[in-house]
Amino acid sequence: MIEVKMEFIRVAEDQNDQEPIELPVEDDGTILLSTVTGQFPGACGLKSEQIGDLGGVDHWFREQEKGEESSGNPAGKTRRLDVKKNQDLVVLGLPWKTTEEELKTYFEQYGEVVFSEIKFDRLTGKSKGFGFVRFAEAETGKQVMVKKHIIQGRTCEVKVPDSRPERRKLFVRCLSKDISDADLKEYFSDYGDVTEVYLPSPHRGFAFVTFEDGDIAQELKGRDHIIKGHHVQLNDAEPKGKNRNQWEGGAEGFTGSGPGSSGDRVGEATENTEISEAETSMTTEIGEADLRDDSVETTVRTWETWGTNYPWHSRQPSTRPDGVCSCRVCRDRVAPADTATRRAEQRRDWGTSGNQPPAMGGNTDGLGGGYGSPHGMAWSQGNQAGGGAGDNAAGYFGNQAKGSW
DNA sequence: GTTGAGCGTT
Image 1: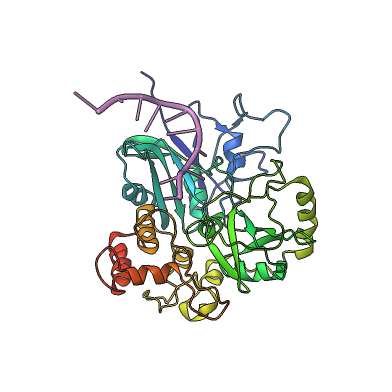
Image 2: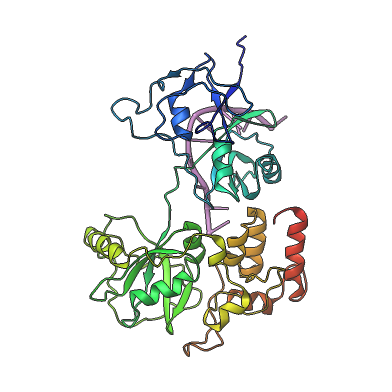
């Protein structure tokens, strides 16, 4: 029988740091250097001093055990503990039985949980034993990651996910020559912070737009947008270095794959080397100076501020108390819902006929009105819950009652 | 009705 003693020590930045962080101690009583540098980048030692009225520390470091790049790469891959706001954290080792709600409840002891999700097998419906959480405050995530967690009897790990590539860059088919990079930036900045726009010159009929928040990019993907009266289609940007020249479309003649066919993958451009170089210069050219603050507040819109130029967004008064636009993107900028809620909202927004968004309305007479929109479709089709627009409010408050907000 | 290191169906 092996006795496992889980102990922590409190480590602070300095004597004035009023918020020491508990770091786990190894079984042999030492603490891993990597454990410390993870939370205190650049730290090379621990000093035993009084922290407030707490005791001091009296531990020595041990080098990280094999497998890590501790040798020859001192400044290298320490585990990422820098949590960006609005970033999901992966939770590993969950019991099969744990539900999303229980996951959320557990982590709420550390701070406001703004998103929780457990991955389930699509066929069997059983948990895969891992999930994701997102905290309202990045600092909460940092603290959570250095703690040990026992959820319903199982030890779980919380990490910054490193598997999924950040799909923040979209391939934009913008076939019209009178769309400039500034147009693209202006248009897409209304959905979220745009960190980069690349529009080949001379015009090649496509562009790349990169968002600060990959979730925003994903929300916008696969749908038609209308910029300066021109349809524009969005897809994930293919990774660089793949077969180029796939796309032979030229800069003219938007043949309008139109409603319902936006899911095709024809015409994806890859980011080849040539573009990559151009992008680099473009990045500095555009600069970061006029990028907006990353704070949620600046990117959330109320209904009044959207007007009719943004068919994506709700053109109906918001049913929310805070007046935030009722479209999913805006709502999620305030408080991303649980996945179950998102799926339900998605079904309602997109209708029940499949997992594709409804096509934009048939109106092609340019700006100024009458665009179809997911919202319009939803309202005109009625809601699953049975009834008129009032269901929106009912939905929100229902979610609220369940703790999703 | 099973599993136990890992990394997110839309």
